[in-house]
Length: 310
Image (cartoon, rainbow, N blue to C red; front, side, top):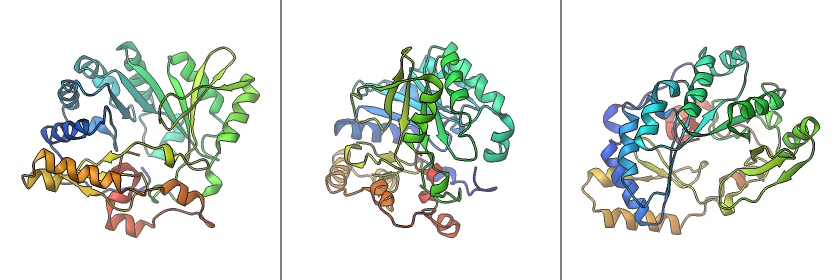
């Protein structure tokens, strides 16, 4: 939570579950077979298990996953599992409650740990996302790895990204993939790369004992050319890139009575014409600071990370 206060979307701006399901069907007809519910924080959406159950009725989808900050996961893990969810990713950047209070302005660190335990107990495949920030949690890599091992969860270390801007990001705060691997190798010994069967952003590695972990190096080693992901915001803006300046307004198309076929044509045309290489462009910048200043973020909230599934 980089700022003290945020402007919340009015309820009528947010897609209904039926609208989300309809768009999912349109995307599935174009070949999409994996859906991730993310945010912001998706468990703030009332009756989320109902949406999961609705999406599970679509045989075209081979995978539905959830990314959450974990605070409410303990409350909903059993319901989500019963609704058909199988995979959960929990953001856990530190094992020290005082650091979370300082950085994320949340005193609910214990709730996250309880949520991870509840997810494992409910039978979920659990991953832990760790955004590594120099001077904040870069001294906890081994502790977080050991926690993941003990919890039965695969850890994924993520380079600190400059999407948005309200966090006062700087390149000096980025701990690179190379540094992450060197730090882990000093503690655990040789690290071997593992085959990555699809275009997932995480490169996977293993230790000699078979423990598997991932690294997402989108800041220092962008994977734009193999990226096959897009994002639909809560209010129906379809973004083709995490760094994308603009998106396609699908809510307007739905509520204006456009047919599924017409919406599908719009989506297909936008995807075929896309030139987004946001992370590559940022990596090539001679001077790299925060992507946006606070004033421009407040003028267009879609630019901030938490509004676009980051």
